[in-house]
Each structure stands twice: as structure tokens, then as C-alpha cells.
Length: 346
Image (spheres, rainbow, N blue to C red):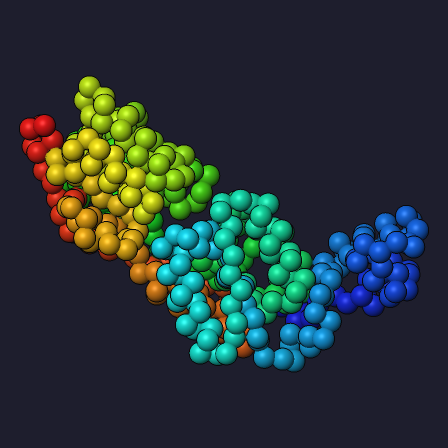
């Protein structure tokens, strides 16, 4: 059972700890003049000690006595089909409860995450769905102890213990590697995102681990990480295709990187001679030539489950945090089934 208090610190609490008036606290948190440096220092120390967040919507009633009206979805890139579909699933669950969703992109920027979350907390959002860019989320502890409810999406929490809904990315990458190995490929390239991103690291580990498990350790030159855009993936794969012993297959561990890989293969007239498997689907992937084989996540299920968990918490569920991990599936369409003999005929 959770022992978290259900109310937030107030200006009156801060004033009592700092030994000043409520008006003085108001002036400090609103960056107004006419407060002595000593008093301002005491107020700021009390704010930090109590985990106080200034309420920009003073008319709001306390969370414990009102129904939720707004939740926030902090995702990585709302222009990406994955985040867009995730948000759509979250909104469907929220709208059934007449709750508004405030959404924003974090773009893998830790400071942006902290800044946006702090602003939303000050505005008294009722709950938070977060796909973190930070490596640890300890900064949320004061707000969680003050009653904020949060559910993590796509990535597990670190430094805090709250609900999460993720997909076994390591397993998905291993499935892609095993699929290409079963087709006879031995020189398989890996295109991945920043290694500091938890999901990117898991996919790389799953891919490399499966190759090693099957006795085919990867050529280090064929494992390329730190790729952020489709253009990055295109450039990286063009370089690999120009090697004396180029890869006969490619695993692109993110949907945007798969897009870039498709462009590189087309530029080298290798789309039908080099196998390609992507991670995450995207619109029209099944209409490419050849249609793209992908490791597919049930994005709708991820978003729906995360939103339902958040609303359960807001309704008073104080059971221990749960971490739901969904399984990906391999969807074969043609690009991932090209034999290595086709590459040798180039």
C-alpha cells in the first residue's frame, strides 16, 4: 500500500517554515521586488524543503476533492508516427472520461523534460504520462510525494517507483537478427540511435547478443549507433555499402532509420539485393518496393494501457507500482526475406 500523502505544500506551509508572511512568499515565488535577500533565501530554502510548486491556477480545488480534468503526455517526438499513434491511444482513453490531454515533444533533451514537467506541475495537471529523456527521474520525487500521479511509457523509471508500460525491445531486436540469420545472412549491419537512450541500447544489445548466441559475432564496422535522423541513416548505410565486403542485410532499429536505409538502398540500386528489417512500423511501409519487414509494437495497446493505469491511480488505486512489458511481433513483408545470394549477384 502506498503511504504517499495526498496533498501538496501550500504558501501558508512555506511561510510558516520560513518565518515570513504569506504575502512575502507570494512575492518571492512570483519574482516580485520588495523582499530582503535574507527573507528571500529563507523562502527558497523552505520551498525546496517542502517540495512546494507555485499554483498558476489558484482557482483550482485540491486534487483529492475534485475529478481530474487535465493530464499531460510528454513524449519524444510527436512528428514521429510512433509518438503520434501513442498520443492518439492516450487521448481516446482520456476523452472517454472527459479529460483533456496536454502533449509536448521532449526530443531526447533532458533539460527540456525537466523544464516542461515543472511548468505542468505548477499548473496543477492531474497526472503525467512520461517517455523520459533523462537517465534518472529523482527530480519528480517531491511532486510524487505531494500527490502527483505518473505513469512511464516506453521506458522504465529510474530513481522513482511508478507504473510503466514498455515493450521488450531487446527481444524484438533478437527476433530480427534471428530472422536474418535463418535466411543465411552473416554480414548484418545494425543502424541504431543514441546509445544513452534506454530503448536504443536494449535493441543494440538484443541484436548483438543474438548474433553472438548463434556463433556469428558482428563485424564492429557494421554496428553504427548515434544516428538521429533518416539522413544520418542514409549516410551511414551508404558508407557500409561502399566497403570491400559490404553487408548483405541491415537491421534499422528505429522507424526513421529504416526510412533512411530504404533511401540508401535505392541510391545503390540494392533494394532487392540487400535484406532490410526495421523496428517500428510507419505509414506506407507495406507499400514500399519491396514491402518493409518490421518488428512491430502494438502502439495502441501501449498507450491505452498506460492511460488506464494513470486514471486508475487518479481514482485512488494505491496498489504497488506495476511494470507491464508487452511483446513485439515480427511482420514479414518481403524486404527481410531477401537471400544473401542476391547480394552476391550484384
